[in-house]
Length: 80
Image (cartoon, rainbow, N blue to C red; front, side, top):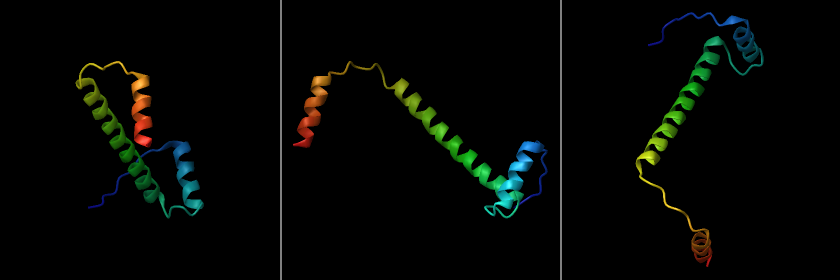
C-alpha cells in the first residue's frame, strides 16, 4: 500500500526533479523518485552479485599458471 512520505532534498535535487517533470519524461515528483529508487535497487543487486562472485572466486582455491601456447592451441582447434 502506498504511503505519503516527505523528504528534504535540497535545491540541487529539487531542481533536477523539476527539470525531469518539465521535460515531460515524468508526470510528477513521485514518478521521478520511484524511477531513481528502481535504478538504485538494480545497482545494489548488481553489486551484490559481484560480491558473491568475488567470494566464490576467493573460495575456489589456488589459481594455476596459464600456458598461453596451450590456450592458443585450444582456441585454434575450436575454430577448426
